Length: 613
Image (cartoon, rainbow, N blue to C red):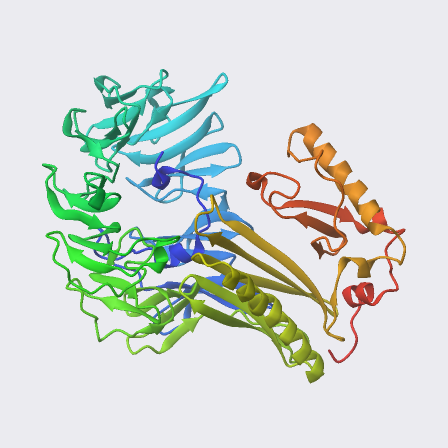
């Protein structure tokens, strides 16, 4: 199923901030001039909504708050659950659901544990059942629905009241549009059906996918070449492309391999299959409004390193090859008539002729900006902010963490190139300036110096995003470094997680051995506990570990201290497959009390605080 139809919604905070509720959507209502923002309360972010002056009009009290959509609704989160509010902060749907779909045809789907529901636009439950494993969005009154059928899962269609319209007998059931839908039957054969379930045409192709309006379909033949079917399932463009995208505005982006010169190059075709833009670019993306972003340089590693230009549907170049991140990450690339671009140093808006709009500000950093009512909303280097048209900040993220007294941890940024972003913490306001300087030098070394040294050894293009979280426990500052690293040519990236336990009184960074009594053989004790937990999880079928290969934890094993337990963790591939992610094992202190050095500086800094810090 397409991503837009799934109820397994991910909390994509940054993308939600810039998702448009603007007036270029057909039939959209006027834009609500309220913007998600937060206030800090004892280092906790509480989200609400501000106006164009930066004043909170909806009290900051949520775990997170999303943008208002064209229906005047916004998704709010509390205790990891989702709900909906309107612009008057009236709760339409209480935050009790795991996920809620977008409103479509005045209804929406919601999931709560094993229970799926259909809600109306006022939040009333029209239908609820635990018989389903999935409910999609309403499209022409039909909602795709999946049910357990023996050992299989079958899909069919229901209406908003739960009435079965077409029985669940398909392996895949796409949305209805224009009175038809693409399905894949029990024999794994594709077919186009009408709204009674009658087959319009059976398709002989192994892979088929529908355009959003079901007017065309992409298919592949036995040679894995791409072609196009019309709404009735008849071939109107024979398979000859090495890759292809769906038609939008009667145009489709395709890749060819006609000659050695054009291997892997991209172009744009019309409904007749004739080229509007010849296949000469290394990448193409549709911006909307007959405009495309294109690149001509070879792509080595991530596409983010390649500068792009804007061309129109006739192939006329409107800008030079001088921009990154054209259109940003929004579904709608042309937003309120403008296009977000970055030149590597600043991010700003172009008009549809490719000219910079001088009445709007240039924001330092790389990311995306959009016009929302009377403000410029931005996500620059993964941080949210709102500006007036002169570039004056209305609201910016505040990631300061308050320690004790006047001391704080402030956020610093190091961005040496477009593919590398490092956020690192810096302490300010400790009474002992020497300790403060020592800690900050070590943090800079751990986050920046050592990281860049490692990157410089690799000659390939690399993307890296490093972030951090901090929390204080008495005199101990616990800094968790996290991120994602991707090297050109790798099958996948590698997540990063390192933890530093820092004594705010002495500046010392503690290691695992500092927690235990001398000669206590903590490595053997912890290894046995980890092996026992591995075996238990494996026997229960909840996890799979490389038990035969795991011999022992390291003396400097990665760990994090929590109130009642210590957590040991391993990188992907160390003790489990990459798919398992970080393997983590929590060990209560009472289980290792006999080897804990409760008189150590480490233990005391974690459990007590000296005055004046």
